[in-house]
Amino acid sequence: MAPAHPYDWPAFALAAALLAAVVILQVLPPSRAVLIAQSLLILLPLAVFPESWDRLLSVFTGKLLLNVRPPLSWAMTGVILAGHLAWLLHSVDSGAMFVDDVAAALSLFGGHIMIMWLVYCLGRLSGLLTVLERMRHELAEAAVRRERARVAGDLHDVLGFSLSAVALKGEVAERLLDTDPARARFEIAALGSLVERAVAELGSIAGNRVELRLRTEIDAAREVLASAGVEVVARVETGPLAAEADTALATVLREGVTNVLRHSRARTCEITVSEAAGSVRLRLVNDGATERPGERGTGLDSIASRTGGRLAAGHRPGGRFEVLAEFRTDPAGPAPGALR
Image 1 (cartoon, rainbow, N blue to C red):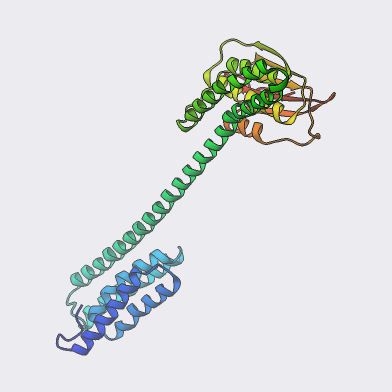
Image 2 (image 1 turned 90 degrees about the vertical axis):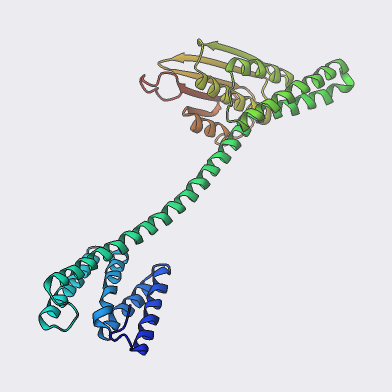
């Protein structure tokens, strides 16, 4: 951009310095102070370089559209466009500028609108790219948090039972070493299969393919609870279950049996699985509740929330503790009633 006279080097140096300042402000993060400074650098030199500096009005107008909220931005832009057009037409009549006819004036005005729109679109695009980049990072962080929560939940649900069983078998073997060495050796031998099972389950968690089977878990619960001196009565009154419901019920049973081992002094444990009205229900009752009424962990609730089931648990008369879990087997069927 040249000053009014091609050999006016001081004016040329001033114009170059002002233009450099405008460009520097353009690449700074948008703010009110930046907008005000850039506006002054564009508007004030119009009195010194009227024939050449008016091209920067396009940048100023685009910046207004970007940084001022509508409808104020529209009103300000309309005023500037109307003023610029009136100025160009007046220059044609007065011969004060290099614009010598109306067509040239309208051409300059059209260029003003095109550059204004280009500045606005490029600014919007830059802002959208910034938002998309921020959203990409947020989505990646959310995915990491979800995966961590999934792994933590699966570790708790799947490995908790196996590790409790290992600990129980070890305690039983230690108690029996002096009184019943044969039984102690049997319990120690069982530790190997339990550890192998835990390792296989750990691999399934890492591969996001956790699949448990209810009948297998009932058999495992019988064995582990029997080692702890708990008599188990199990009744399964359902046919073959869908894999998703089967895994969900097996997971709840694991958590419930783990709680029996850790938090009760049960002598008997009753496991009942029934099916009705498009849903399947698991009922787990033990007679050795030791926690005070109102105290309850979050493991079972976490399982229910992650598997889409419903769960109720609590103390019952006679020192019993009951867990009820229900899962839909027919998504098109009626909603199940309240758990009771």
